[in-house]
Amino acid sequence: QSSVRLTVAPVGPRKRENAVSTLCRLVRLSRSWFYGHGAGEAARESRKARRAARDKALLERISHFFKASKGRYGSKRIHRDPCADGESVSERRVARIMQENRISAGPRKPRKPVTTNSNHQLTPSPNLLQRAFHCTTQNTVWLADITYVGTGEGWLYLAAIKN
Image 1: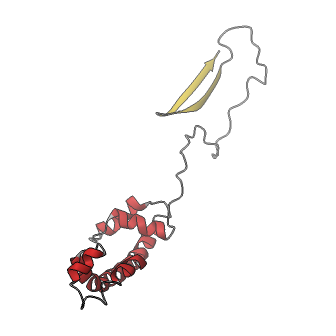
Image 2: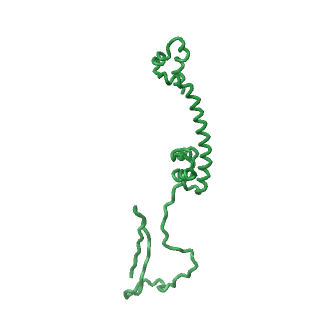
Image 3: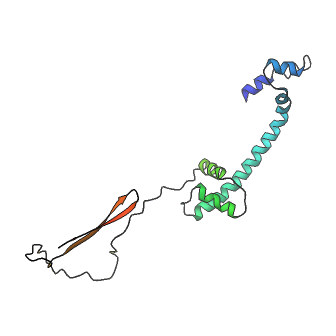
């Protein structure tokens, strides 16, 4: 804005001596900009004040929805809540307000499959083998285990059986 004021300075005081169009041409300024600049300043300030008040009201609602989601929702999901209430607000505005106020969801933890439920009241199976792993006849001792392997397409379960 300081460069704008410097540009307008030579035109304003000399507009009685020369035509405004001539002065504007010399400083490479459009006449419409020169005449509209002063009136536009008040309008811009008014728009900034209205936007700031609206952003403050939206921040309160965004904070409420963010807390209701236990800090899990990002701007896309938070945006749905005011829209569901009939309020017209853009997703980019919600994202900007959240970013300016450092409201962001934490990273999602990857879900890991569970193969064993160790929190139960059942009694374990009896140990019939008594750590005697060597056997001489087939189909008398069986060994089994299950695990999972993470891949790009999801989790694969691997089961192994040995007799």
